Length: 86
Image 1: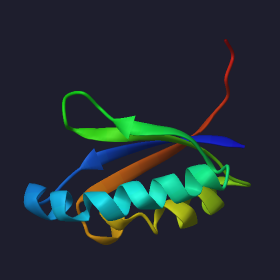
Image 2 (image 1 turned 180 degrees about the horizontal axis):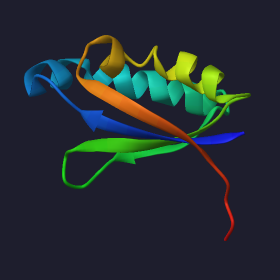
Image 3 (image 1 turned 30 degrees about the vertical axis):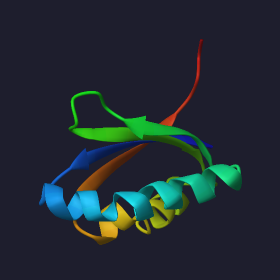
Image 4 (image 1 turned 60 degrees about the vertical axis):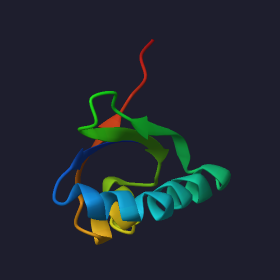
């Protein structure tokens, strides 16, 4: 199944900056494994979008709970199933 993760920046911007390399590395590793389809920040700096494949919503939630931004308390995420129609 395909899921969209809306990641919303919260907390300290300086801490988020310190965790950015680990966050991007985490996503790149998932991309190399074929899990992440695409990912990137919003232009307004409010957060970002991640599109990924997982077996279930629970599996997607477990996976994204390992994101260094989430573990570091600088992002919260909303995950929804996604069906491409066009």
